[in-house]
Length: 201
Image 1 (cartoon, rainbow, N blue to C red):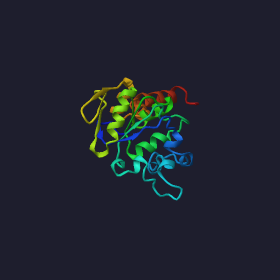
Image 2 (cartoon, rainbow, N blue to C red):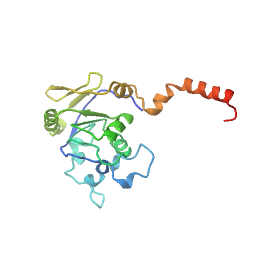
Image 3 (cartoon, rainbow, N blue to C red):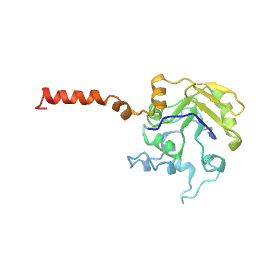
Image 4 (cartoon, rainbow, N blue to C red):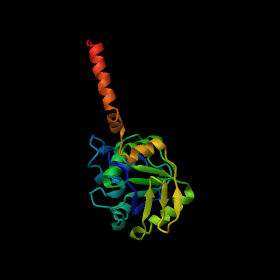
């Protein structure tokens, strides 16, 4: 997993509540176990017509937001099923930060494991950032994970809370596998001892 760096860019406004994981990546795209290639189907049913053509008024199809790295959304983002493909699709599209009032617990945890920072802020802050994001390319929202701040275009700054361990993992690019490899010497020593003391296993 890549190390999380500060993000400053265009944010896509999605003022919907209860955006569930089936909206983020519909069930027909869950056959793969690869983390890549899902970005093209992110928000598929809202993004494309049945003939595969783009729905022009969907936010991520608008020229200003095609390269958005941040989503500002309504409350309860990522509810529904626990599919890990949802953060995979967001990350593959290029989204590295989601800002919302609240998240489904499993989706929230899965984001950190896949290099996405899910930020929780109060409704008053979300309203300001949503309006800021609606200005398109004329607005840039900045996220500083080390200092735990989100800055609007006008410099207004909001402080967010994040678990210290999850923050450490994001900043150092450590997913579950990366954390395990930090203990690889201890794992090797344990396996060697098992072979020597219990060769029948």
